[in-house]
Amino acid sequence: MRLYAQTPARRVRQVIADLAAVALIYAAVRLALAVHDAIMRLAEPGRAAERSGNGLADALGDAGDAASNVPLVGDQLKKPLSSAAEAGTGLADAGRALQDTVGDVATLATIALIAIPVVCVLLLWLPPRLRWIRHGDATRRLASAPGGVDLIALRVLTGSQLALAALPTPPGGFAEAWRRGDEQVIADLAAIGLRQAGLRF
Image (tube, rainbow, N blue to C red; front, side):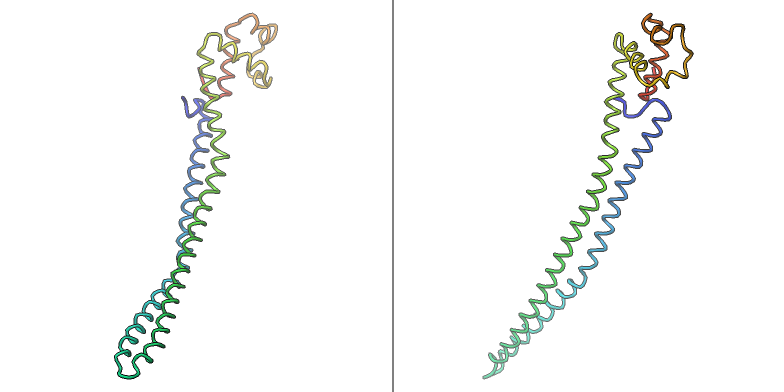
């Protein structure tokens, strides 16, 4: 199985197309990762809120524990401090929730920014490449099969007549020469057919 054409012009086009596809996929991945990092920076307020909330909850919890040791009024002093500590825990929870939301948005954006361009590139690039590989393989097998060169020459005869302009017209025309089995004309026609497919004898 041949991945690239034998004719230089088509091979260059194929290599350029392959490199462009790889470069576009690489650029899409790099862009997606940069966007992911930028979005994740938006989670910093959430991290700050979580740290502050945890610190506040710990400090107020410790103060409430210390206040509970005050004789007679210890339990009454502890209740408002415990309530404030719960508010600090709520602030920490809100900070974690913000970080989770930002992380989810960053992940979805990254997936979308990678998947959409990659799918578009693959849909535009891969089918023609696979089609050429199959067609080139089938044409090579046909050229090496008995009578295959005749069939390739016939394909050229029934195709665009512009391809025949480069050849000298044999007596009676190309079709008559093909019917007679003129080996030189058939070889010339088959060479055109192979060249159209990006192949050579």
